[in-house]
Length: 375
View 1 (tube, rainbow, N blue to C red):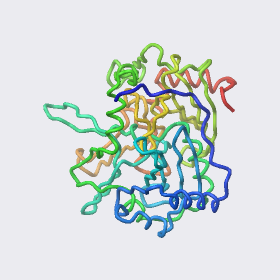
View 2: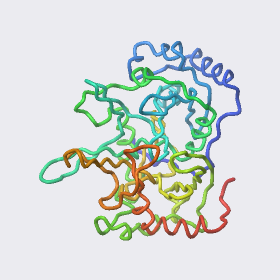
View 3: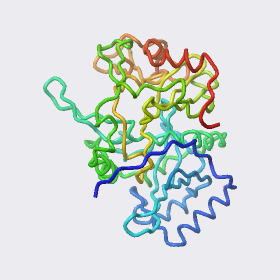
């Protein structure tokens, strides 16, 4: 039966004020009391191998009706991540269930939940959530909607706080195989356990943001000044600042502000990231309280992806190789200098700083003192 998902505007969740051994003890008590661990990867047949292999949680965060148990942060050559245990009560039976997931930090500095993985013949790829089918040049093209894996904005600060507690992350190349479902090399789409909760939520059209249509688009290709946001969905710089937090990033030159802001109609929330030189926007989210077993919202917000280019974005250009091997996620003609921390990432400020909503944020929020709703 379809239903309207409640909404709520809340302050960011905080890590539980517990010692790591207390978190571990609470988690073991949960499992010993009958909560089923439902792994999707190689640990599926014996999920307890996760605990015996050193993936015991050390931190706990709660949001709405979901608890998140997190290991200390881990690192492999490509990702900084947690093994996360998403704990929810099964509606049909009332029993508690535990879903091991991988929460990883993206280039845009947002924490995401991997949907699956591909690891075949030297190829390694993390599933980026739901997909959309586009028509290009007479062909159908499948594209990932990466924002569908973004963890709630309300726990991003907590995840970053836990991340900073670990000065030297343990190197680990086994966890992803144990936790994530492996797909064949031809499959980018996630599996049903990721998509079905989204389908159920969308079945009641009252849950759709702007009727499922885009809330923001560029009216002219490759023109950042042509952004149009649907009336009511603009960030409310005057009265909608929910909270402001701080973190640090070597890539972005030091201190970062994270500013969470409601839209004027209070239907969506934005998170602006502001470093010493860069400002960019994390894809907006609904304020719905329903989370899937991946820890992500079941309702998403559609908008032009070029609005959410991070301060440094992937940009590979080598004059010594064929042009077909060049790759950039920065709109053509707007890539700046390469990052000194990563030679495949270029400065996207030329694009970002011309976008009207970012200019407005610099002027109306960074340029003056604003009192947030929380904090």
